[in-house]
Image (cartoon, rainbow, N blue to C red; front, side):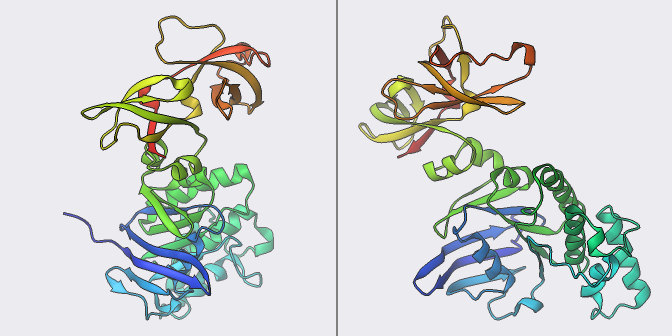
Length: 363
């Protein structure tokens, strides 16, 4: 039996004069899900989040939370809370008072409020911080306090607008894991807005990729990365190499595709037609770099080594192939520093790949 959605976005559009920020979006978000809206700046993700929160009125469509229409419900009466990038904790209040702020009109007595504050401090791993001021907190600690203040009233949905954007890389990665663990602990539905692909992949149950005010694909992190449905999604989620290809024959659901340096390959191609133009794509880590021509390997690309980048745990190398317009990106793990081999510029190299690593896209 299908679980009823906690959030239903039905045909939501939002116009700012002549600008269409959100364009006829439909979404269903399940109870207890960590759901991310992912896209570049200006794609409409923050506007859509603000529509859910009640800070923006949709130009068309309907928002339902737990089956109830929110279109005429003001922001402060919706069963949601929101955490912003700058955390917005009150500098004149200590940690305990910040967390308790939303409970003042809840009808709870002082002891009950103190108990809830202490429970939240334990949850966010800041016991003993109740009387510290905001100036005594690190960026990560301020973020935890902002989360505790948002969660203490037990909203049905927590909305997060780039909550980790102000943190440095190492702390941001640590907080991604902590935020995901916190969400699983409390069981509240989280909806995250981010432009950071790694952040969305790390934390989310499902991700909606947005561009131009539209949602282009909704899927799990694994499906988005391994089975993108369009060039836009494939190109936005991680690094990828594209090859223009032509369907030269069809035999049932098997397409024979000619794709430049990849050669002629047979792939499953349901609904393709002979002479159709398509794209083949492959992730850099799916390519294996050889400095000597390997024997008995069918799928090979020959090229010349170009400049690369050493990134510690891995190296990103570029291979230039005759008549291919862009260098092919290859990711090489530096598992053993004594054996890390980067080769010489303009050296002839070979790339091998498995057919199963290729992604077939409509061009």
